[in-house]
Length: 328
Image (cartoon, rainbow, N blue to C red; front, side, top):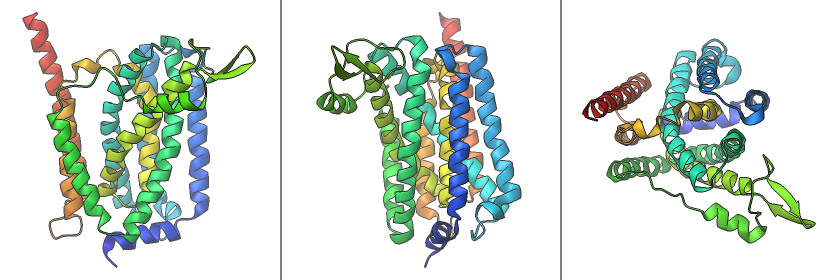
């Protein structure tokens, strides 16, 4: 049995199910907190910045608990506490970086379906909840595949490299997103013409109908799953510990709503985001190919590379924007 199979199998068989249950309760508590802080639908820039910082700090606080209590989280893991902490932070920052591209899609969805400003926080919330459930399923399946079929790792790697190349070739975001979710919902249930607050369903003439909010939530969830097809294989290149993969995804998604409201006015200014994500995807794919070889890339190096590339992309975008402003 190779090292990846050893780590993954040990994680699946030795990880106490109670720990997953406790983490699920923690996740529900954090989702409840997120619901509470966006009640009323009024999310100011100051509030969004404050909560973005809070979720970011909470992720690093959780990393600290991994460092001090890793033996409690995964008593039979082959990872040391230091390795687990670095793996979580790398996975978290990777997922966070990749999720920024989701924000462009959220903006397109809201424009496409003419979602009122005060309803957008709740639409994002339902989309994030759906994404959490679907990603948990995908992580469980992916971990099992890696533990049973080692060659799947190389399929993941090829897919990531191909995705990175395709991302680099794309010129811009489309003005509309794929509406497969809308078509499926409309086949199952009629949809009303107007939003009814945060309601997903309504009754008109004693007839149960979906509201446009359900369409928006469905499209957000489907699009996030499509993004997860990239990000889930990517994080498995960082760590094959299912608990760390799940935790990194949870913390990355929980802060996504607040981050959207911070960046919504600046999304079109991140001109170097796509090239940066393309480079990261290709790098992670190469890392996955080399993981069991003598040329395996250490996770701390991956963390440094990730931070460097995203920093260059942000700084470059800011400088580009300033240059454009001077020209105008």
